[in-house]
Amino acid sequence: MTAAVAQILDEFQQLTPAERVEVRRRIVEIVPMSDDLTDDDFGALAAESFRALDEEEAERAQAR
Image 1 (cartoon, rainbow, N blue to C red):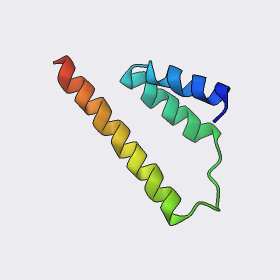
Image 2: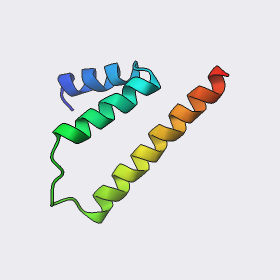
Image 3: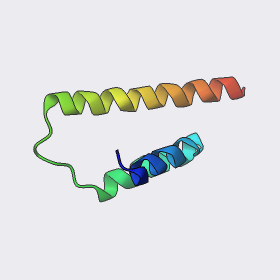
């Protein structure tokens, strides 16, 4: 991983849950999906999405 990517990911972690959702939506809009993704790739993407959603839900629960 390059330093630039690491910095972006670090800064992403500093965002609020709402800001993270906004970033994800914007990335999906601007990054073309590739036809060469495998079922494993889609599974990994889904798992990461659910992990992120679970994390955001836990953060909201702790804030209550």
